[in-house]
Image (cartoon, rainbow, N blue to C red):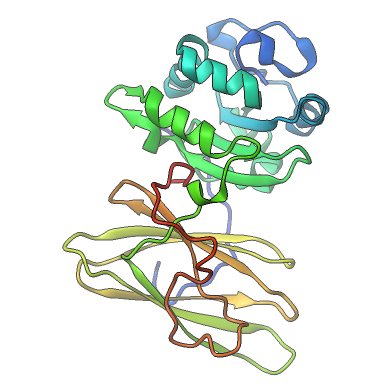
Length: 290
């Protein structure tokens, strides 16, 4: 069973209760540790990424952060797959610099929060671009298959987020749930609250996560939508911000990811996704997060 990193408070307000790759990839050239000490329990995450960025920029690669701990059996399993599965190993070594971030006993906690990797089961993956910006995060439970990680799923994730990968493989339209923007309420020039409704037309409960990215700070929270029912939710929009709102269907699988209508657009009320037809696609969501 995976262990979750202790949660931190989220500002998102809902209306319901609702690197140490194969040795040749290791940033900084340090020796690969033994399996029992895969993670460096003294290393500082910011310093690790700074070293990895040098290689990533020089070789036009992305950075794959693997958050975990030496006691985490699934972390060791995933790393073993990185080393032993040729197709995965080749994809990783060609397009990524892998960095193992130790989060044992709150080690690198601030770093984890900054990279949206707190309050998740381990191992947890984060992809950074060559400038260190977070491109996506991934709950690795979606990469599992029985008692191991699926090489095919891991490979699909790596291919979807490598440099130059088409955006259509990352952000997709999903017909269910149907998310509708209702209203934007608040004083002129002040903090406003954006109200939405998520409707589930299937016979199964849907677990969703919404991530809001805006200049005032990023916010993430999860909620469920009952079978055949709906769930209202809301979040605050700061003055002058134009947030990008991404929703992810976590369960049931396969996971899918789509953009929500923007609350600051004229005439956006009661309009359902896709918010931007040019970026949404019907292709599989290989790069979505759990």
